[in-house]
Image 1: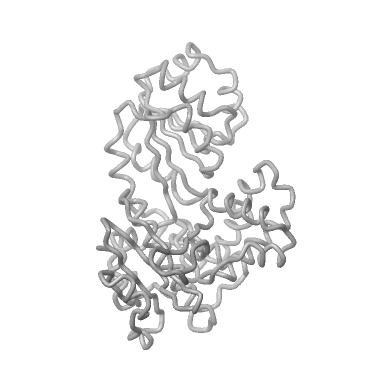
Image 2: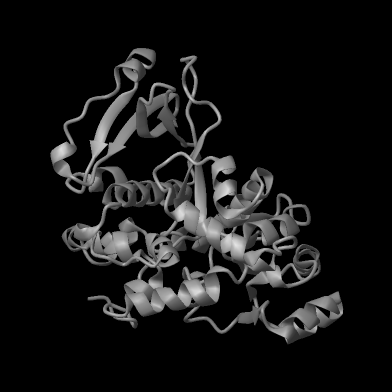
Length: 381
């Protein structure tokens, strides 16, 4: 059992620690409640030279609006670090943080944000070459294995596929439904619906529900639009916003050699299955579900993507499908080497072979089926 007073070490901690005391501004992006503030609180627990501000607070917004270099020096005094939570709520935050970085070089800025659309565009131009950006997701399979052990986490796979990995969910055994309802009701739409042009909140909710039912399947913006009452371009724009709010992510189709490979298709997955299941109101046990296969596919791909992001490598990811319905769940390319993977929750279906058309077109590619039995090989190595 995980208790709330136990801190789960996050994989980003070492990378962020390595930058402390440098001239680089640090930005940590991720959905609300994934643990950005907890991560920083843990890292700075024994320091008294950190000033904390929250961009959601009106007085902090007013302070930054009327900021001058003289005033900010006075406020910061002898502090060496300034942490600004939910920085995207501050007007012209990129220029404001640039002012601090330029005029108070002894103070290192660390900012968090729950929207890469909002904060990313505000700081990229202002601090080009002078910042490092990190992305934090709900707790990962690997982080939980490090916190407990592999056997314990393998036993909990059916539970994680229903309730996900949000920190408060993980740390509240027995109260997962209540926590996820609060997360989805109070936080999920808070940043999404604040974007300019999102004036059809009911359509956004319906869109998110439609996407939740299509995990593991190809997504057509035309078909989704007809289902929820939006034109395809609006669907695409809303999907882009959902992705930049760290709720979903897109996986494109791999195409290189065959004329009949799908070239412009996409699948959409959720970063957290607890949120996905909250959106559709289904917390049934995995044994009683008809969507166990898609849930497993979403789980494994999301966990793999977390790991790839944290490792900051150059691995590229796709799915593969042809017009004749031959398909592979997941393709990776690293240093020119292609690796293909199928994901099967039912281990009795694990003896499938690589599609002949793929094997012929890409003879040097490897192929592997990932089940709960060998998931550690895929997510920990």
